[in-house]
Image (cartoon, rainbow, N blue to C red; front, side):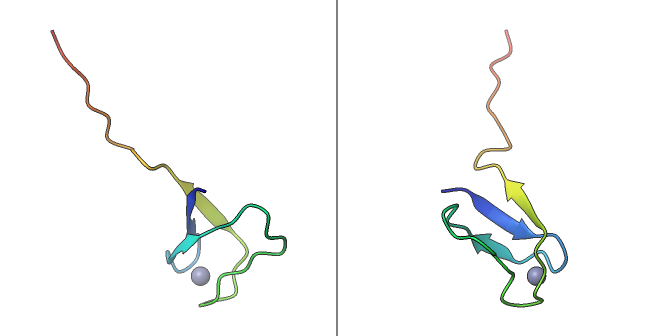
Length: 46
Ligand SMILES: [Zn+2]
């Protein structure tokens, strides 16, 4: 399961991908951003 964010009100939403017709329960938007679990990766410099 990925974490999504509403594109309008930026509310984080846990999305089950099996759910069809997903809608933000706050603003009713149907546009979501997929949020990566780890945006900051550790990079080992040498
Ligand atoms: Zn929203």
